[in-house]
Length: 278
Length: 278
Image (tube, rainbow over all chains, first blue to last red; front, side, top):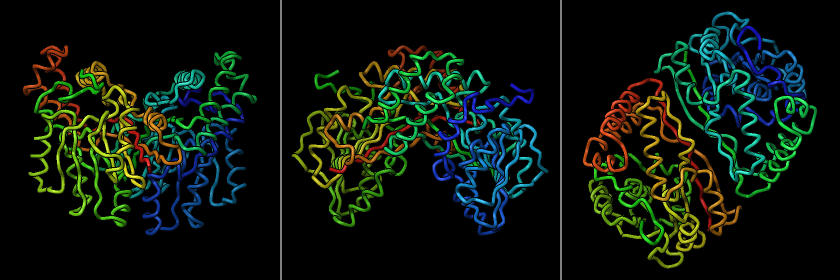
């Protein structure tokens, strides 16, 4: 843990294979609540500047850049320098050029006041020690008239059906790792409270709720294969260090893949989405 | 508990004041997932017949009748005969006339095979002993080419913020009463599994997910006032029988109203919605 209070760098100590697992996230499946606002702002000003904070593998950032269009620009940031070349490679592979990459700590963003039209994060506040300070800092770099947007899952609402033992084991492991890194499992329910504490007024805030992941064929396969790949790749060693046994890992992989083959497979958690008009 | 396995009649033994509390439910806030399907079916056939099962106070049924339009018709049913005059009075007060009322047990519906274009229920399967049998029966009375639709909350995902003690106490009480009446707190996550077990094929089923209730000003006030009214009205005696003390009730009322006054108030649970095309 570094002194800034930021946590969960390098994806909680997991390896490069985790990056691939996260790249199925796009602006369309992970920031859909924000897209109508972006479209409407674009009509006023096609040269929008968007800051994506804690962007990780940058797959959401890259699709946000596509949504902004050629006149817009995304600054994709993460606390972990190691992830940014991955994010850059991903954007390049998709032909996205209106994007730049920069290491940044959300608790002390290296940007001027009001530098961005849109400041966005996805699944960030649940992984850091001081969400209120982070939110205040994100609002600081938002232009007056611009928006700050965030989406946070509430991991305590996570449901898994059918409740195969290995899948529940993964859920428990993932929750424990998040907590051990100073995160919270109740970010979704606290997001509105954090926004108010961070200086936003209630009438500036639009709140909506969603669910995620899915029971859809394609997504559940991606998810199950992703977990299995993570745990059979280089990350296996890290998972062992975090307390899983070889048998646990085998059970998780087996049951997660079996879960994805089930027609009644459902794996969801509640998501809170806020848009703050500054 | 009657022999049919049905449970939770008379709103879990609570009184008439509970009826009023539920009337803020409409097709627009509680069956929105189904409305596009109804609109599209209406274009083919304006004389749609819709069966609403376990409709309780009938506020959703009445708005479904409005959505069907004057050529359509809703049959509003509940296991509890005592609730139907309430439902009828509600429809009359809203000027809804294309609706009729009938006592019916979902486990043995008094209708012919394929009698309805649309068969709907809301928050039903979580309160009965045999959701699969109920679902099979609902599918039986659905016309080939018609649809069966259900929406079920998953009470174990319920989140409350801020976590005021009295509000948590209400949540616990409400959950315990539901369980004591043979219901389940995990209906949302099981709904797809029940549909498959009840005879639907996976490619007939469209699944979506929502959240409910809200952090919106109007709804949270309705909810908080509703709980407070229930517990200070005739139902207070029933609540005492179910194990709450006078002090518990006072704390629940006080904290629930205080919760509704909070700008960061959030009270939600995950909802699963399915539409089965027969």
